[in-house]
Image 1 (tube, protein in one colour):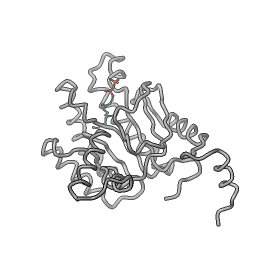
Image 2 (cartoon, protein in one colour):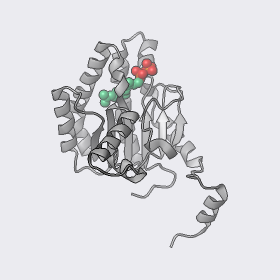
Image 3 (tube, helix red, strand yellow):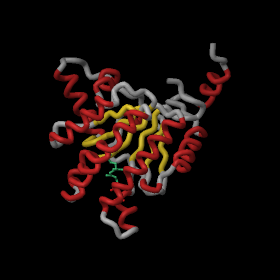
Image 4 (cartoon, rainbow, N blue to C red):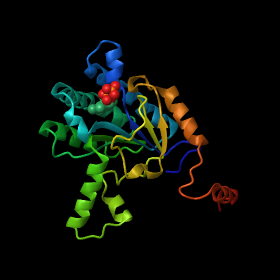
Length: 242
Ligand code: FPP
């Protein structure tokens, strides 16, 4: 799909700040994650409406297992309940859900819920929602290299790219992190090589359509050079498309 003027084809988001959102209200952290699901639903609709083709979100990292056990089980419960409530609506909105990450480590009922959500929405083509769950950028690069090695193939950039868990999507054009932190936290380490980075001070549950539009506007004002010079970019732009 062609990029609509100034609209990124693929947006990736580190949805940070749920815990602080809850603490500010003297609520348990899990209440922040529940509110995070509401923000995610808003973003899915908003991205679809703006012509974004792919939205990739970081829902649970390989390192999140180190959180208190009640928060980990709470996040698993939130995922199961959100899927139970939202998959049919997502299908109606044309959203294809795909889970990206190490599935073997998940409880069987969670794995089944993920498989069912993917199967139910497999034919949808308005927006692809990649939910990174039990995902880490280093895990992904290592598993891709291990598969190449097992297949007896040479490790080249192209081959590795094709074996990553997100191989079905183009690289993200715009990577947003909410919550006022300035780091990638092991998210899309390979794919973000040329992504435009945007950091928002808003806590994820407060991130709304206006905040998304501000990020897209900032993205549209950037010059993406992919290693080339500004002069080269200007020269290419002055050549009319055939
Ligand atoms: C980071 O905020 C957020 C997470 C680790 C979980 C993100 C999950 C959601 C937005 C809910 C959607 C999830 C599913 C399962 C579909 P944090 O807890 O690190 O916040 P803090 O930095 O304020 O403590």
